[in-house]
Image (cartoon, rainbow, N blue to C red; front, side, top):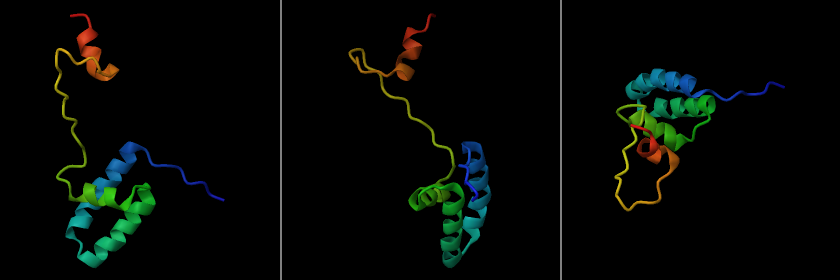
Amino acid sequence: MHKKLPMSFSERHKYLLLMKSRYKKAPKKEKHILLNEMQQVTGLHRKSIIRLMNAPSLTTECRPRALHKDDNNLCGRRSAFLLAPA
């Protein structure tokens, strides 16, 4: 029996970029078929794929969190720049 290996992030990104142009040009009935195919290939949920196909870009940008002087609940990633030597 063949074991299915998960796609890496970069492979999935390349595949979805290729499929996005096909998805945008397709009529509604064909979009259903394309969504089924993308769901099988990537392993992503259908709603996630629809969001990615309708988004202006496949990448998401993180918004920086506002820092306050009295904020003691910072995680390591957010507080690393505060602790780094200048």
